[in-house]
Image (cartoon, rainbow, N blue to C red; front, side, top):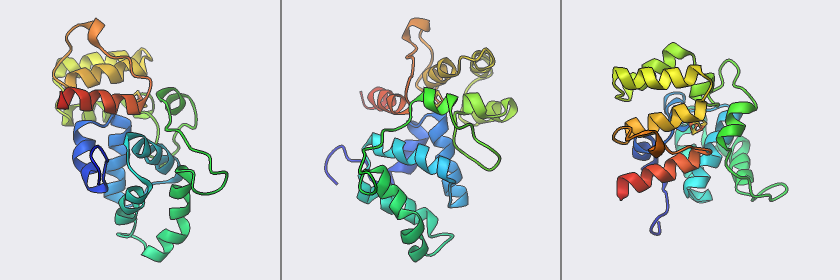
Length: 194
Ligand code: SF4
């Protein structure tokens, strides 16, 4: 791959370091269940396109997981089309844009068995707390993020989470106000890589 290109085998590490919770969750479910429902495939697939994964790598990435459960033939017939579609290679050949936070928070709320959505908006409070703990946030940090979430400021909660993950809040003025999961990713990479 050329410099700056995101390959399928880089995703595991990136998901731990630089993915917002919504995408980290989708990644974990995909790894665990070797499948994601349509809403999750759209949300996660377009995000991956947005961080710079090529169509070729995307096909490899999804196929590697899915064929742990179904055979390659079935994958090619049932799922490959949709991935090419997201890259504008099928159907109307439109170039589909990754979903913004607003879209993820406001539309198409996840039903039972779905994995898409925004964890700050759609995940049960106890489970969200647990996730924050697992990801290393202190008791005070969890408290702060949960309070912000309960007030309905989901994107601000995400931004505060980002600050804690990337070395601590340095004052309210410094908290980025994320509008987009891809913005979260880019900001994270900038912080980590200088
Ligand atoms: Fe994802 Fe946006 Fe929710 Fe953060 S606020 S978890 S980036 S949808």
